[in-house]
Each structure stands twice: as structure tokens, then as C-alpha cells.
Length: 433
Image: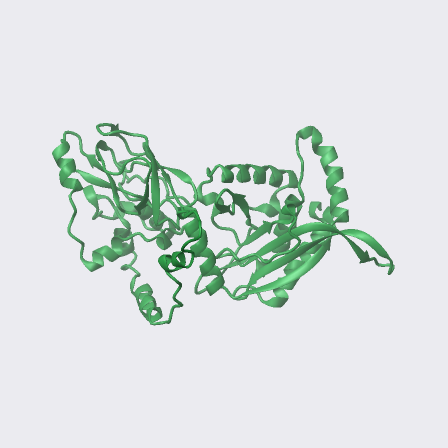
């Protein structure tokens, strides 16, 4: 039986993508796990692998096509011995499913928000492979559902999301629908249309730049952040002279190993240790609850052409400065090449945005949901200060602003966290103890 291959949701925020390159052609025989195509998501270019075996009967979406919606058909897979007529039949539009089915089978980006990749294809007790969609495998792993006990309702008996949810006692769509209905009546500020804005600039020369997936995602997430997260801001200045001297000494000793520590490496370590010392601040907002994290998973903003990534350094509190430095350099390079996997830029409870290297003295950063806070780091500037003896001296002073989600962290807790970050930076030897 011919089946359609659908555009997958390869990241939690993906609504559409670009089919960058086909790695198979019509007539090719493929097995489960073979790479079919490279797909550009809103964040990176990722490989898309076959779930079932069969023959590529027809390619429906050409290479380089952008704006392909998630769950749109992109190719037709044939069983062994089927001919092209079966592909044409599978390509024909299917009648719209009943509302319950449509609701259960739709895969909006919000429902793919697990930060872990789909588990490997499972096997039954008889050793035979169990055919299940990546989303169904991920949900089953998260909920502890044994796929071998389920009967699939998808093509060729494939287990889909609805089958796993049914095993959990029914789909959980009533509450979200009710919530949507409740909020639908709330007034929404109307923004001028694109044509209305363009009309304002009639007669003026400009270039119209189409938004790519990354730019759309950044716009949507940061608008959501500023509209829904109750930000408040805490500001501190930190003296860097001891850190700069200590860094210089360490780099001299590590030069033979090809290691060169940056100020940013020390900031990452200082934040990771502070989150361990104030565990209630190491938390994220999860809608109806707060998740208090055990490890310090620190995200760091990396600017790339046309946007940014926030790769996450997991277990940063346990890593040496040289290990953090090497990992950060690797993540930053692959971020700029758009080669990060989703699990490398999702998660974390805390983020750092450092514009000091660009000469920015201070700024306020926008929290990246669901993080509880983000630290905005400015440049270190030679400044006259009053020392402990009441004398004026010149010191290198760096301004930092902690943007805090008040739903997760209260003012005194945020102040304690920022104070410990400053203490770690002003006494860098403590970070090695």
C-alpha cells in the first residue's frame, strides 16, 4: 500500500521548513533509518530519515522549496512490487478527517517540545521491529507506555500519537481548547498590516527582505516573552582586576596546551556555581508549576548571520574552565554553521548574553522562555573608584543586569543570586576550590 511521507516537525518551534536537498531519487529502495533528505528548520539544517522500508515512488516537493508546512506530503513511498499508479493514488487529496481524528493527529510545534530526541525504534518481545512515528515513540518514552502493547491506527499499522494518548486514558485536548476559547474573546491589539506600512513609505526607495524561519521564530518568541513574562531587572557592577590578573596567569600556564580562557568562560562558571549555591533560583516556569533544576545548565547567546542561537552547556558547575572554554568554542562554531542539533540549544534554566566584547556598557536582555533569568553582560571599563581605604583608584569595572521572571524568582532571591555571581568574579580563585 502506497503511503505519503509527510514534512516532519524537526524542532519544537518548527511550523514550516525548506526541503534543502533530496538524498534519494524516485525508484530508490530505502530501509528504516536511511537518510531521505536534508531539511532546513527555523534553527538548523537537519537530516530526515525513513521510518519504514519501501521504494520512493514519487517526489512531491522539489529541492530548494521553502515554506513547506509541517505534515504536508513531500513524497510517496511504495511497497515492493507496486507501480507508479499506486503513487498517483496516494498523491490524490484525502477527505478531511473527523474533528476528533484531526485533533488527535495534528502535530503542532508546541506538542513536540520535548528537549530529547525520539527514542530508537523499539522491538517487541519476539524481536520484530515495532513501527511507530517519532512523536509517538517520544511520548511513549516520556509517559512510560509500552509500545508493544498497542495496536497502530496509522498506515500499515503504524503506531501514531493518538494511539499512545488513548493508552494514557484519552487525548488531553479538552483543557487547551477551553483555554483557547476563554482567551479568544480577550481584546488583541491590532498592528498595521504590511500593506499599510508599505504605503507610509511610498516614493521612498527600500529593499523588501522576506523573513526566514529563524527570524519569524525569534520575533514570535521574544514578543511572547515581553507580553507574558513579568520581567524585573537587577543591576550590579563588578571589579574585574583580580580576574584579569588571574586569567592572564592561567593562560600563560595553559598556553602549551593550546588553551586560552576568555572572560566569558569565567562568567559561565560563576553563574553555574551561583545557581548551585541558590538552588531555588535554578528554576524554569512550566505553566502551572515551577521546575527546580538539579544541574546548572547554562545557555549562552551566540550571534549568527540573521539571528542567534543559545547553545546550552550542561552540568557547567562540574566542568573545569578549560573544558567549558573548549565546549563553548565548539558550540559557537557549529551554531554559526547552523549545525547544532535541537538538544544542544534547547533546555537550560539560565542564559548569558554578553555584548561587552562589542563595547556595549550595559543593556537589558529579554528572558528566553522557559528560563527563569538571563544575565546581560557589558564591557569592562577603566573607572575611578573609591577603595577600602577611602582613596580614589582606577579599576576595571563591568556592568551586569539580571533580567528575572518574577513568577519564578522574587526580588530578594534574584539579588542573592546576582551577589554570588559578583563574588565569584571578584574572587576567581574561589571558583577552583
